Amino acid sequence: MSQCFLRPVRQNDTRRRLLSMKGEQVLCMIEEHFDNLTNYMGGLHPDLASWFDLLLALAKKGLLDDKILYKTEMENDSVHPAVREWLKDNLETLRSSSQTEWTSAEDETLEKLHDVFNKAFFRGALSPARNPLEFIRKNNPDGTPNKKWTSSKAGLSQPDGALPGSRRSVIRIYETSLDSGDRLKYYMNVLLHEMIHSFEINYCCRCHSCNSSLQDFWGQTGHGVGFIKLLKKAQAFAKRTMNIDLHVGLREGLATEIYALQEKQLEIEWPWEELGLSESEMMEAAEWCRKRKASEQIQDSAPGDETLGQ
Image (tube, rainbow, N blue to C red; front, side):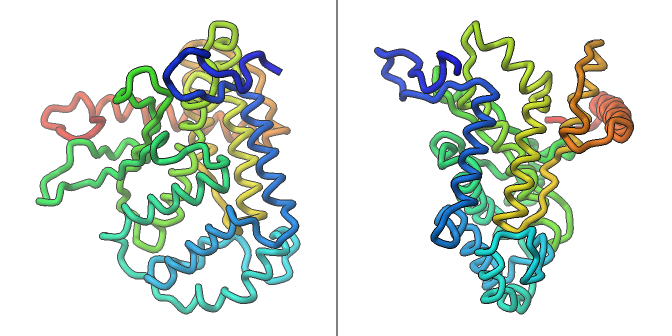
């Protein structure tokens, strides 16, 4: 175990004491948390029950489409027994609600999703105080284009410089033009992806002895082997205990990492079999990423373009 694990930044520092972990320790801690929630003996763990409470609340407001569910068969063994019991009692309620437009509901719904995901995936470590969430709409309230919005990003997580010296990150989710019925699952995928980045920003040690292993784990772009392993564990946990099938931007993130390595003429041995991914498919995805980056650079340099990439 690293000497940095659970070590305060400084004993005499007035800042809050922080977890300070290596990447592998993050992976172990999250896996242990998933096991605790999955093996809870009293039915649905309260931190998972809040997810299903949110589903019912969204359904009553007409903001839910049951196609976000992974499995609806009551006897499917791939879904947690407590979840199957919940489906027996509530599936018809979810299906009977009609989907309405999200326009005025996205900010509030994203905040609720953040709260639920924080409990279910991150042990409550990404509170709004440590990880504020911003929803960036395409247009301002007066209808003018929002200069903060960009079509080149789905989401962004970065250190928050508002409090110098603090370990705090901010997430920005950019409004999508997808049809209303597809938006919830889209935002769920983007939000969880960015929350994993935020957890790394907030809680991974950056001391001199840990810094080199940090990049080995998280990669050049934050989408290294460790990040992909964490995504895969989160995917499996979500299927089993929340009955949702999330792609979480896995292939896109990995393609970005491979592209960055190629640009720097670096090579690593990817554990493709362990990751459950095809090397040939991911190399094709990296080529797609290269073409997309080239296209974005052309658009960024085009005269009169006032919004892309800002």
